[in-house]
Amino acid sequence: MIRIGIDPIIFSAGPITLRWYGVFVALAIAFIVWWAVRGAKRIGLSNDAIYGAAAWAIPMGLIFARVFHIVDQLDYYILNPGALLGFEGLAVFGGIVGGAFGIWVYSRIKKFPFGPFADMIAPGAIAGQAIGRLACTINGCCYGTTTDVPWAFIYTNPNTMAPIGVPTHPTVVYELLFDLAVFGLLWKLRGKLAPAGSLFAIYILTYSVGRFFLTFLRQGDIFAGGFLEAQIVSVVAVAAVLPFLLIRTRRARPEGPAGKGPAITT
Image (cartoon, rainbow, N blue to C red; front, side, top):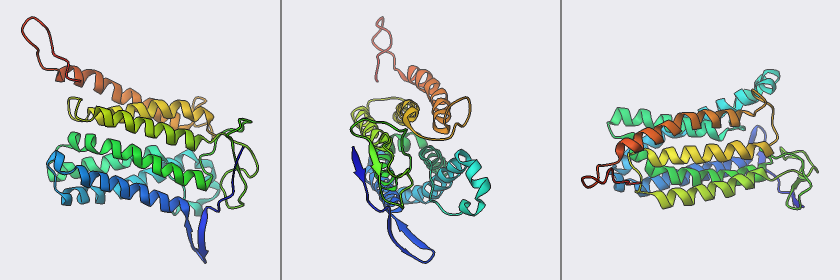
């Protein structure tokens, strides 16, 4: 089995604590912004527009990620209200929802289409999530159910958030690898889907399906109906996105040569 003894805390001085979690989350955000700047010209936007969108997306993403986490662990925060402050617990789905909402609001203010922007940023977003899972690997959060598989993680550092000395499924690594697979899919589909927004929808759909099943190996509190919060959100996301893909992409197919029906562009 794989033993992880890395201290999640880089340094601590009084009330100030710097964790590897925060460092990798910052790197993930920086990577997504870099990705957006890199793709800005392709969709006719300036770098200033990207930075403006980031100024909305980053705080909204962090706030939503925090809220989703608090709702998921509500019993703990009711007993420990002082822990509500800070960003030591973040939920990926909340970050996706909040970030997308922030960009959408900014696109309404600046009058640019949201769909092309969302499609452009989708591969970078899932790659950023993979970077974020490195943070979880060191932090010990998001650990899996107990197991005896030879690749199980055993955390040994007293500052870890995982149970010390207990072999668990490395669910964060499973998701990291899945994120990279989704990135490969989105990269291959770039520029091949219509209408605008379809690639972003594929990103949400594939990630939600994968997250639903991977969460069965994740330790956590039951949220509703025997499922964890991430699984409930996954089902809602699929239910919202799948009709969009089925209806909008069907309407976006241009007519082919006379007598031969519609030409498939996807």
